[in-house]
Image (cartoon, rainbow, N blue to C red; front, side, top):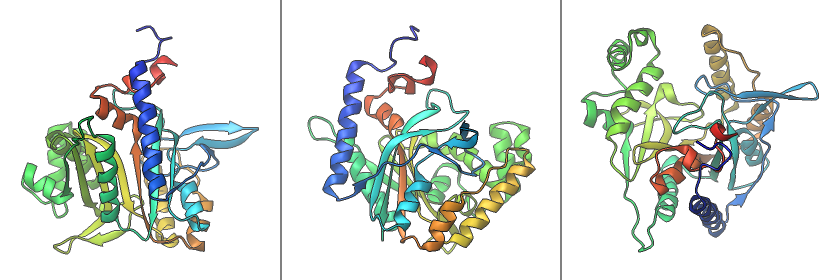
Length: 320
């Protein structure tokens, strides 16, 4: 590898520019406002599965933002209406063929919408961006999380016994999974057994388990089970999007932050200060909304049919 050279070809850079321009036109036609928010903030996410990159400015602790979410929700609470952001996000410890510590994220929020309405808009955007020169485009399917498990593994993930999930996770990985949480076991099983069997094109999976709610509201599925109103979109088996019917209850959000903090302590991971500005925004009143984030570098990989994120970026971390 000649590290001074870009990983992406000139054709890829042109394709990226066209993709970004098409996204902006898509939202312009729908009167969704583009906003720019900080990539350096004083707070960060408490999610166990996301590692932030810490930095400082004039002695003040800060973090490169893992997404624009918290700042965008403060704008929503201030009356912005429908908004989108397209810019850089950062996550530590994520380097590989599908990961780069610096990446481009598209995130948007629709006021008054639910998760299923937003799934439909995600499908529309995907069909636009994946359309061929002859006008043909990709297939988009929707499946519930439970149906994915029934079809591939023959059991219900929402009611499955934790021990059975741990045993299956250990069989797929190692005995260390015999003591893992329900959320982590399901995540491993899904990534190994489900993602690899998803059909080509775009697959949108919804009604995630209660234990994987993150920042989503809770609900009930068609058989009365408690689920999180969360969805993910996959392109040719690769996750590209994560969306929610957004949690807007400040008290519930504070409780989830507390649970994250306690879990971090139990695992001897750094504890992170809670974003009080976000809680204040939720307390002031945030409109009912649905939001989604898309990793544009991974999306471009799917559009181009390349198998390494290095080929979708001018300069990945490997070339910096």
